[in-house]
Image (spheres, rainbow, N blue to C red):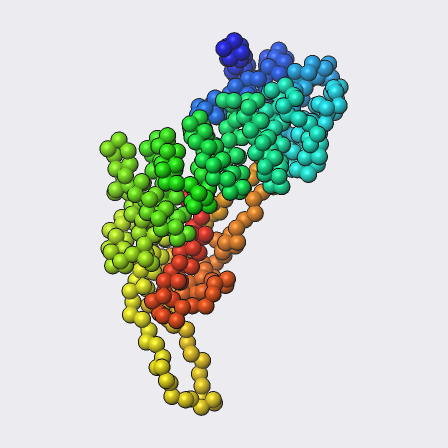
Amino acid sequence: MKRATVTRRLIGLLLLAGGHPSTGFAQDTLQPYQLVRSLQLIQDRIAAGDHAALPMQAKLLEMADARLRAANAEDYKDPKNFRALLVYGMSGGNPVTVEAATSRATTDPQSLAIAKGVIDYLNGRPGEAIEALRPIDPMALPPDLGAFLALVKGSLLAGDQPATALRLLDEARLLSPGTLVEEAALRRSVGLAVAQGDAARFALASTQYVERYLYSPYASQFADSFVSGVIALHMSISQDKLGDITSMMDPEREKVIYLRIARRAAIDGLNDLSAFASARAEQGRDGNTNQDDPRALLYASLSTVTSGTIEDVRAKLGKIDRSRLSEGDRALLDAAQAIAGEVVAPPTALPAEKPAPVPAAAAQPVPEIATAQGADDSGLPPVEGAISEQPAVTAASGGPAANAPDMAAAASADPATVMPASAPSPAAGPEPADPTDAAMTRTRRQLDLIDQMLGAAPK
C-alpha cells in the first residue's frame, strides 16, 4: 500500500510535468528508478483492464527514455538506477537508449552481461541474447529485475526448449504476481502448452488467465491461442472443462469464443465439437439467447453440410440473414450454399459397364466427372483482404516473425487463380468413383481452402 501511494504521487507529479515539458521537471527532479517504477504501475493497471491508462504509458515511456539518456555515470552507480534501465529495456524501451546508457555506466559484470543480452534481444538477435543470458538465474536477482529476465528468457527459448521456457515463465509469475509480467507469462504459457500437447497445462493456464486478465488489452492474443488450443487438443479436453473455463467470461466474450470454436471445428470436420460450440453460442446466459445470431446458424450448418440431411441444411442456410454477416462469412455462406446444391444435383451418368471397343485412332480422353456448377466455379465471390489468423511474434516478444501459412500467397493472388470447388487438392488422394461421394470429398477440400483464405475470425 505504501509503495502504491508513493507511486501515485509520482504519477501526479509526472502528469503535472507533462503539461509543461519545457520545464524539464520530471527529467531533472526524479531519479530514473522512480520514473520506471511509475511506468510499471501503469502497465500493471493496463494488464488489469484499465485501457484508459494506455496513453499514460506512452507518456511515461517518453519521459523515462529522456531521463535515462540524460543520466550520467554517477547516476548509474546507484544499482537501482541501472536495474531500472534494464527493466525499461525489457518493458518495450528504446534499444538505442539502453546501449548508450550502458556504454557510460560502471557496474558489476553480471549487470553488464544482462544489459548485453537485453540489447541483443531488443535488436532482434535472439541467438546472441540467449548466450549472454544463459548463465544468469532470474531467481537469484532482485524480484523486479528477475521477473522481467525470466519472461525474456522464456520467450527466447520457447521455440527450441519449450519445457525450459515454461519453467521460466512460471518463475516470472512467481516473482511478479498480479502484474503485466504475469499476464504476458500466462498468455505465452497457453500457446506453449498447446505446442507441447499438454492439455492439463493448457486448461490450467487458460483458467488462470481468464480469472485474472480477461480484460487486458492483450486478451485477444490469448483468445487466438485458446481457440487454436481447443481445436488442437480436442481429444484431450472435455466439453465440461471447456464449459468451466468459458463460464468465467462475460456472456458476450463467451459467445464470441464459442462462435470461433464452432467455425474452426466445422472447417476441420470436428462435427461433435462444432455442434457443441454452436449450441453454446446460441444458448447464451441470464435468459438472453443468441438463437437469432446468423453466425451460430451458419457454423452449425457447416458441421452437417456433408453429413446431415442436406435439404434441412439447405433450408437453414436459406434462412440466414446475410446482411448481418461479415464480408468473409458472406463468402463462406455462398460457398456452403453452392456446395449444398452440388451435393443434391443429379449425378452425371456413369459409363456403361461394358463399353463398346473404340478404335485406337478414334479414342478420346474421358472427361472428369463435372460438378453441378461445371468445372469453372469462378462464380464464387472473390476473397478480399484475407489475412493470416496466426499472429506474428514481434521483436518485443523476443522471437522472429511467425512464418506465413502456405495459403498466404493465395490470399494475395488474383481471385481468378483461386482453386474452384471441383479442383482436387494437390496433396489429396484419388476422387471416389461414386459422383455423390466425390462431391462430398470436394466439399471438405473447398471448405478447408476457403477457411485458410478467409483467415480472420468472426468479430
